[in-house]
Image 1: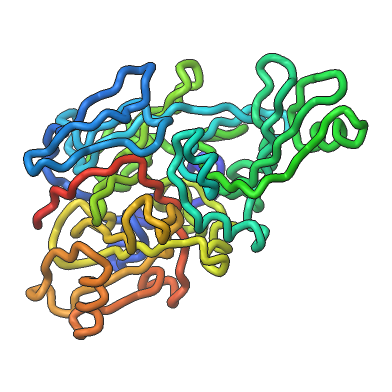
Image 2 (image 1 turned 45 degrees about the horizontal axis):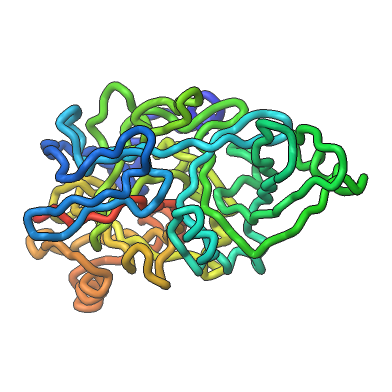
Length: 379
């Protein structure tokens, strides 16, 4: 939630707390000079799926069809991050308009049809009842939006949605809430079919707020927000900071399961995301709180995901792990989880489930990957 919609720690107090204790993903500023990206911009009308070679011959490409544009870095700001612009989608919650983006889905056929990332692990959220309800309505009135069951600011909000397909059998009318859907179904005017499809679709603007925007500073990984501009509901687009991570990906940050982290990181809060861990729907992100300075969340080397985006083991929902070099003179760039665990097992790294301040409580962060690109960080 935005600062205007929720009580939160004073900004200076939060940074002091986090800086002293290494408390959260995305706490420390980075100041690496930006450089121009080696990728092509797509037009406003086409997804940025085209690729361009790097000097090493590898490709840079978007893997989400709703990506309008992206760059790995920019010379327009000092922060060591690029940007990714998504196509917005409209929905309604309780009679009010909200706007979301889509990145991943549990269903392979749906992923292919909608150009989303296929993530089989998300299917584990269904038996755990860890999803919200999404109603896609066909045969209705012009302008009928998707109906969602919740939005940020509610206890049951989650970016993970189970898709229900609804079809009119009676006289169509606009549906603006789950209650409207239920009433139409009970009246025999609407047939609702529950699917096994889960989609990762964070809500970026809701009935009384939106994700915070960093439209002036643009120097820190965290900063005033993860959006680089306010959601544009006229042109239906929104732009996030785009961060580097090993192995070979660029990601953005949308939601987290712990409220203090959401307030400090200026992203969405979803307590239901915590259920993804027991549902075995998560991957693992390994974050460094000391060592080699760089563009990572805490101001050190980029984080390391446990698997490559698009693999069967991969998920955009990450169990957050923090690492500290016992002797910083031993610090080196680690590029795979195997290397991270080897350094831990050799006694070089201290491992903190969650962060040092969460008392071994792991929290879940929604960090989708819309772009694949070779890593450029050398340390």
